[in-house]
Amino acid sequence: METLARYRARRPFIGTSFDLGSPAVIEAAAALPLDWCVLDWEHALWNETNLPSALQVLAGSPMLGIVRVPHAEGPWIKKALDWGADGVLVPNVRDPAEARRCVEEAKYAPLGRRGVGAYRPSKFYTDLHSVVGSANENTLLWLMVEKVSLVAELAEVCALPGVDGFIVGRNDLAQSTGRAYADGAAETDALAERAMDICVAAGKPVGCFSGDPEEVKRWAARGVNLLTVGDDAQFIRDGMAWVAAQLGAGTREGPRKEY
Image (cartoon, rainbow, N blue to C red; front, side):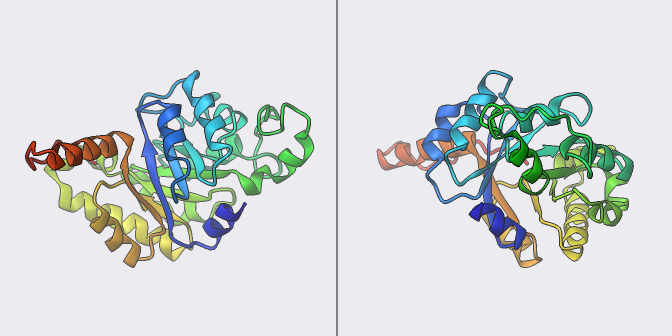
């Protein structure tokens, strides 16, 4: 709850991504001073077997586990929350109507219509009523900003009750303009920063995926508070490169993830 209190106060909220589908990697990182992490069920190596195990590991950590679900439609949102996720990150939201549907899936009445089945969070139905009563406040609904159409109506979405935060995805934001990020990086970055500024002005937590700490610091100076750098595969590569350099294998920089 202390971590959530810092989140609600919009203090700098430091996080990362776990993409390798390994609960053991999360267990190794669980004691680090991180506030939150994204487990990418949309693109990365998580599935219905390893994801619940990862959430069990995070249950004993102050790090909030946010599951990036595959889609807004279907059972994905409620499955992630019923398995014990502290929140969900929903991709490909195009407009306020789709944002409202996300609220319906992620929040219980009166905000939404989430089905009651919080099996693990309720300690296997032994504490169901208190979990349902506090879930709207204690579980987070974040939306991915990766459509130009959503940026155009983002102020309206920020005002929706039940929407708790936003993550800007620049690669898909570029795709929604009809080109790759590499073909229009400056224009996409400007659009991403416009989206972040709208969220900051509305008092909503917002962040953007990046592999560059200096870039994230620049966004923090604009009022962005969901500060996220790198992912588990990048950290493993960087750690191995450091060991190789210490043992005289040279200082050649390894491949970098393209955000």
